[in-house]
Amino acid sequence: MTVTLGSLVHEGYLYFLPFHDTKSMLSDSYAGAALRNGREILFQAFNWESHKHDWWRNLERKVPDIGRSGFTSAWLPPATNSFAPEGYLPQNLYSLNSKYGSEHLLKGLLQKMKQHKVRPMADIVINHRVGTTQGHGGMYNRYDGISLSWDEHAVTSCTGGLGNRSTGDNFHGVPNIDHTQLFVRRDITAWLQWLCNNVGFQDFRFDFARGYSAKYVKEYIEGAKPIFSVGEYWDSCNYNGHGLDYNQDSHRQRIINWIDGAGQLSTAFDFTTKGILQEAVKGQLWRLRDSQGKPPGVIGWWPSRAVTFLDNHDTGSTQAHWPFPSNHIMEGYAYILTHPGIPSVFYDHFYDWGDSNHDQIVKLIDIRKHQDIHSRSSIRILEAQPNLYSAIIGEKVCMKIGDSSWCPTGREWTLATCGHRYAIWHK
Image 1 (cartoon, rainbow, N blue to C red):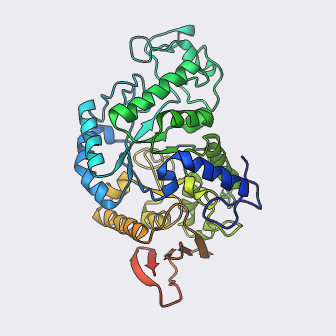
Image 2 (image 1 turned 90 degrees about the vertical axis):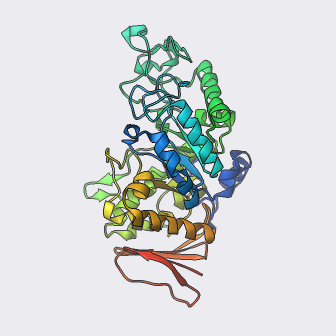
Image 3 (image 1 turned 45 degrees about the horizontal axis):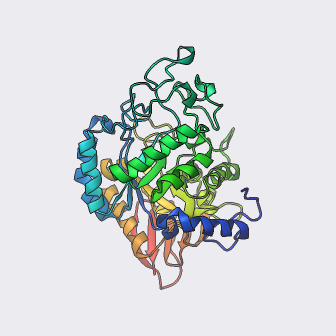
């Protein structure tokens, strides 16, 4: 469904599209309690170098702190056998021995996460798969000798197989899976069910979601029934000769379309908010209010399906493809942890950037939980100037970021916490 200008806003706002509102409520009824609840706080529990550091053991030691800090779900790196150590070139999907550790260590980690009420999120890499043997055209496009021993018909014709053309963008240099094939979808659904029912994963993150039609994500979610899902639909924001465009409506619309295509059963990472926020904190905070007076990312249109974040293993870490400015990290978290949407915290910022960052993030999570800010909380943006942004969220929390000094009027507001270029009040 297309959202048109003039009637833009999804849940949590007064400017509802009645039809989409109805669809949203219907999909919520079978999308799982997590989406309905809207009180998820995610943790990305790895970076690009994690495979070098006995990762399942390292994480197991941190699980009590992750749970105590208030995270509801922790996204783990791809746990299956992979041609590349980071896990994003999968081959034998049923082998859980990876560079992150053994199957035994993984299952111990998942058990400990459940004890501390942190749901394990599996990284689902099903756009592409490295072949084991040469087939049609001399390409490595067959999977002989391992589980899911597909032939060339499981590979798209545009990446060297005998299947149909891709239903999305190609991931170059490796065979892309043809999701139009019924046998492929049956096998993937059974594998996803195995991850949930036998291995112990509860949530999914869909890698490179641009690579295949969102309707297949809907089918896989309906088949495996994860508690929570998020898709990585990442394409470039709109730039001009002078930098980032103010209006990113077409960018967030593409993410909205993907969510709709997935039957509204999955959330999506809010790359629009990331792109805008990391420019805004450099003295351009006027960017954080769109032409309708709302947040300019996916959280401004459909907050219950938007996962906000500052960085991940691709944009930050040692890859640093599109990093958030490091001296503004806490401003960024002050924004996403007080705002509608579903916030996600990156491992590096939480564990590798010092105790002060860790403790400030925990404090912000604590305020979010105690003031019951959730994915659909209302928001009133009060100021959006170059060096000052302020807003009231859920009528319970007031926040500001930026260099300019500011505080809310009225005696009912009490300072809850403050730090470098940010402050939060509550009633």
